[in-house]
Structures are given as C-alpha cells and as structure tokens.
Image 1 (cartoon, rainbow, N blue to C red):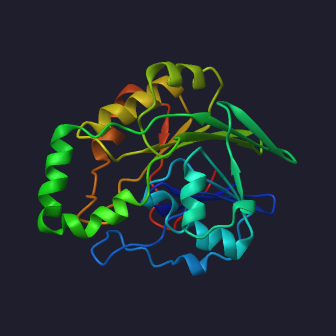
Image 2: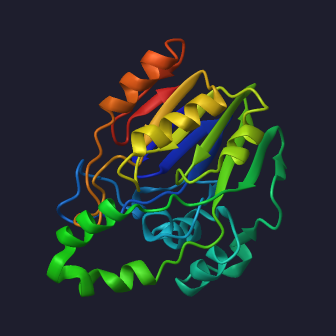
Amino acid sequence: MKLTWFGTAGFKIESGGRTLLIDPYFTRNRGAFPKQALKPSDIHRADLILITHGHFDHIFDVPEIASKTNAAVYCGRGVDQTLIQKGLKAGRIHRVIKDGQTFDFDGLKIQAFFSRHIQFDRWLMIRTLCRMHINLPRYLPLLRGYPEGQVLSWRISLEEKVLHHFGSAGASTSELERLGRQALDVLLVPMQGHTHITRIAHRHVVRLAPKIVIPHHQDNFFPPISTLVNTEPFVKKVQASHPDITVLIPGINETVEI
C-alpha cells in the first residue's frame, strides 16, 4: 500500500491498482508553506474520493478532480449540496446516510462514522482575526461558501491493514472509545483548529492505540486564514507515552509504503 500526503488533510492511497483520495485539496495562495506544486489538473486517476467535511480546504478542488477522473464521491449530509452548487454532477455523489455505514468494493472495505469538527478556541480565533485584519471581508465569501456539513471520519480496510482518517480532531471521548474497540494499524490525525491541538491529537492516539500515527493538516495552507503548526511537541508526547508507536511525518507529495 502506498500513501501520499498532499498537504492539509489530503491523501492518496494506492493499492491493487486502485486509487483512493481523501479530502484532495491543492489550490493555495502565494503565501502557503510548504508550497504545493501540484494542481487539480495534475490528478489523472481516482476511483473513489472520500470527504470528511465541507470546508474549502477539504472540497474546493473535488468537483474538478471528480469530473475529470469519473471518481465516485462519498460525503455527508449538506456537503453533497455544496458540491452540486460548485459544479459537480449529482450522479457522482453518494451521501452517507447513517453512522457506521459500510461500503465494500471487492475487498476494499470503507466505513463512514459520524464525527465532529474541532471547536475553535477563543485565543486561536483572536490570533486568526488579527492576522486577517483588514483582509477579513476578502476571505468571508470563501469561508461562508463552504459550510461544514455532516462531519465524517473514515475507516479503510485493505491489504489486511486498517487505517483511520480524521479531517478534524473534534471527536468525542465516547466516539474514540467506540472506534478504539477495533485494532488499528494507521491513524491519520489532524493538527489544526485549537491552541492545545497537541493534547487533543495525543488523546486520539491514546484512545485508538495505532501501530503508526501520521499527523497532518499542520501546514500553512492558506495564510492568513491558516498558520504553520509545530508537530515536534506532539511527536515527543507520543514517544514518551507510547514508545512502541511509530510516528511518520511525510513531506508534501511524498509517498510512503505502509
């Protein structure tokens, strides 16, 4: 299995001749770091696209990619309507209608769980507004035009391995306890949205006990809306509490073998 990080919460999973994309987002502004050299037009193949929620940094490029590749798109309630408004044909979209819904694609098992977006804390919001300052009106249409919708997390089982992807780290304790009842090989945990994101992401690790954890969404993908998150405190915290867990931090567009 090959896993490629596209920046933000975007990943590509390749296995057995199939290509699966999660939250593929490539469109950046000039201040983004690290730079994303790829554009949506560079994505020539995708069989399935999984969406965690409807914010712009998760679905902005999905209509173009899905239309070009003929990929089937799976998303939650409300996100489907945004995608249609942005130009994706309704026939390409499959809406998740129940928590824990399972899809089986000839040995590739995918399960969707209702989740929650992280709650932005006061200090993070103040810092973000200060960075945006007089440019706030410029970015409001982008923020308002992509409502959150039903938040999902995705569990993917293939090659006798289980991966779990969160697009936002707002999962409740009960949700994590439920997900933790099944053994997990790879956890993809996001690092945006809260001043204490290190503690929150570490809680996901403690509850889910994966063999490998890959932090993501730490990049400064669209300043001044975003900022770069230091993953080093998270890595040290995991190493101290769970030295048996491997922490992988791929570079943007870097492919790793799982």
